[in-house]
Length: 68
View (spheres, rainbow, N blue to C red):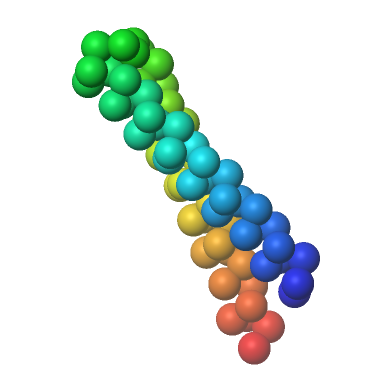
C-alpha cells in the first residue's frame, strides 16, 4: 500500500510540474515572448497527465473498495 501512495505522490508532483510549465508558457504567450503552439502543447500535456493520473487513482480506489 505504501508503494501505491508513494507512486501517486510522485505522479501528482509531475502533474503539478506540468501545470506550472503550462502556466509559464501561457504567461509568455500573453506577454509576447512565447509561442502560441508551445503554450497549447503544454496545456494539452498537462491536461492529459491530469486525466491519466485521475484514472489511475480511480482504479486504485476501486481496487481498495473491492478488497474491503
